[in-house]
Image (cartoon, rainbow, N blue to C red):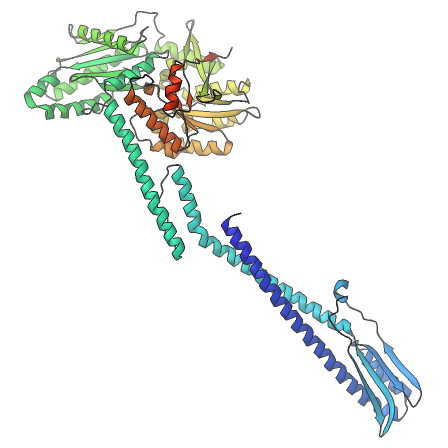
Length: 635
């Protein structure tokens, strides 16, 4: 029971006791007053009746005596009027049985009134002629007392209810600071810090509110310091201090994550020799200033719909990883980047011919070191030709063209022919399944491609929401969602911004299906408000929500506080599970601590060996996913 209800119960019982005491006092006072009034009425009636009877008794007029007695008796206030007439030796009696209306029988059985009677001897001169007895009718007293009691109950009951209402309202006002403190405490556990609680006028509550506000500020500073520490750690270990781009080790981590899954795309290296000449001519400061400007220029050169990682890997060399694009797109992209860099060089008064670009497609390469070596070789080749651009295409089977992807995607959406793969996410401690994640696949030219190979084209052709609907529709309509396990489906940015079709489709899932949606960190950062709105829609429907690729960007982790996901999956570039990668493991451990403080499950990805599990446990990871348990086709 809440404190407010306890206080309300205590006050209501106190009020009830007071009301009962007031009722008892008023009831007894009314009863005494009615009793005295009856005694007075009987005495007055007896005296008046005696005076009225005297003339008729003297004349021995029996008819007159009877008429007087009957007139008084008909008033109904008396139960009995008795006249013993000595001269005639007669007894004249009038009796009336009590008749009471609108009074319950149980009330009449209460001994509230004693019988009231008045006797007197009537004389004629010195001679006694009769004896008169008048007995009051108690029905009148009971009826009057009942009406008084009912009025008292209504009045005091109304007053009691009014006091309860005023007390309840007053307690709500007085308890507002306590409720605000409780809300603030719950927000602190979620690492959400709002405005300070306004201080109330009550002295005790004022000191308590001041204490919680001070504690909130200190906890906020502590958490902000933790976030800043992680940001500084990531900046120190993953970024180039001059350009702000990723450094070589961070690029290698992304290359490893990219090469671990099937896909398309390529790696571009840029060697801008005039930066070294500028350093000798104008010094480090001038060179660093131009490097920052060049980095901003490079960031805008990603292929639309693709994911790019920008890095500075040496004094004069930059790299761009394009995670998904076909050969035709890569060729056009290489020429566009070369034109932009030449134009930038000319704007800065530098030789546009003193730079070279090389692009290598991923092909069958499996290791980042092999791909970087191939890119270095291609860059040397670029310096030997004019223009200084070299595109090393993959020697394996020709990848599908852009138009081929478009036709295949549109056909798969229209005919609902996406293949389905599922992969479990495991509890690292118990070995049980956290949830089951579903992926799409597509058959093209006799090859089966996973979603990672064509997601860039899906975004480029504005087919993301249609693909999400096609995948979920097949899962729901063909009842592939297993009721004993949570089933997770990935959503695109378009679906996050317009979730109505997906939610309507999700409502058609068979009873007991545990459905969850997952979005990437890219989507959460691209439209934070849409992501928050989606979460607000999912919670009442008991649909789970998670975030994927957390830690891919070197952005603030505030979005974790705002969205409050059920779980987060670390980006594959953070798969630092080797015994010598202490810095990377420190980043993973810091993210795991933040997840634990927010009561969010933290899941590691790209786990490929059983030896990694023991190390992940020590880092605070709660779940894992990777090719240690690879995705399996639905069939």
